[in-house]
Image (cartoon, rainbow over all chains, first blue to last red; front, side, top):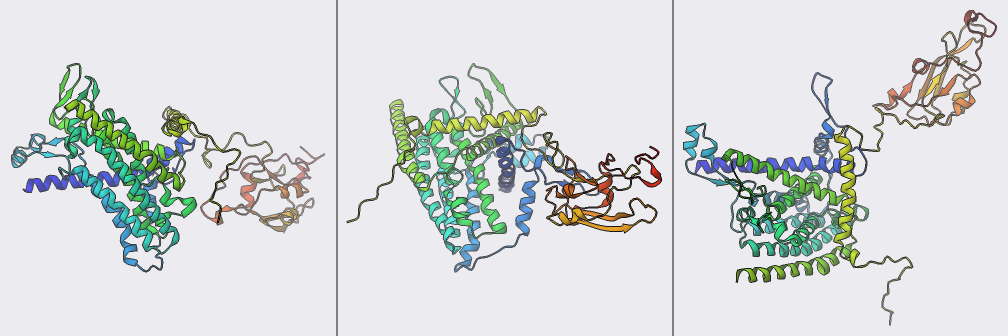
Length: 382
Length: 192
């Protein structure tokens, strides 16, 4: 029992550290990537001076995130005269918490066997005994449903913020966020339904394990190989869920100032921004898990590599765990970077275009994809 | 009964074929362009070249400043090193931003030009670099040179430049009207 507690405390700490780090690093990645994409240098003036020396650590502007955080902490926390101060105060947290919770069901590594890892310390190894733990905070059979349940809760924060700010811009932003989220949540769920048909499970760990095989003898059995169409639709719907360009209608700064967080300042506004950046990482983690083979490299399982030609490389448990943790983070970072690329490439939709795009373009495509998948699965299994 | 609303069709209405309507292909084209620029610039950065058009201002200066760019001021020197300025206040009078402050002083030992500036200061936080001071100067005592080094400062007090710095940061002695200096050194007809 105590062993479980130790392991899961470690997992939760790791997950929190990863998410908060991603939230901070992605602000830097966004700035720098946008700058390089548009022939600029990007923010690089903030520095930390080592005390008592003249050595200034600039590190390519990595400390701008720190400066941002500090600025938001010490700024005046201005409040509007609102009729519902409680909802106003609680809204950023309601937007922020579900984003963090989604990560609970995402597996960031394979099966962990602490006794094997701690081989050098016989006492610790004996204490853990035969226990093994999947590297995932909550291994739930309904994992994917939890993702959608918590993912859908984020909108409550935006709606609360919009309604309780007593500002027309905020309310318009919240209304837009609401309708947009209803439209795109549907598309997102429908695209994933095809995957569920193929894998026959909602458990994210099982989905990842099924992706470590091969298709047609050589292609890795990734979701993106089975469902390239669904992968594209899923990514588009997920970006729309996260309310980023080209779907940033709820906070369109040229129309609505800042949308549903117009009236927020200091760290409350920072929480909204932070939630947005963490959600980039969450979307990337989800996409990785569902479509890109999760924490595994191609042809890799918990035992080691099994190449299609017949070659095998057996890896020690420690090496497997390390590779899986790193591979997951790298994949998440790459997909986050791709999302940022999209954000700095496309212009914003008009509002009617957003809804038309969801209901008249993406929804029929998702349905068609689902139908084709269902028929194909039925033909192949029957 | 009101007529149903009909949207005006403009002469330059964009036409979209199936390629544009499919949306995805054009998005991919756009992504290819932006990621191409990104990769090109990243390739330059990692090979030690510069992947940006930005001039990294106080540390770098642009190479393509015009030859007659109106940059930072200098006060010219007489051949003996004293300021050519005779504290006539014409630059301070003509200055539209009123940033030049001159305190004149009397030097009885120098009969050729007994008036000299004890204090000559320019406030660069307000200077608009119009060059009128240079045009107004009857003595070729104030000039503007091409470069603008070290102008940024952390507070306004440090944006005042005094006589000493104006004289010495880029000393120039080739004045058009070299009056006879003390002891006649460098003066026309004097001992060169």
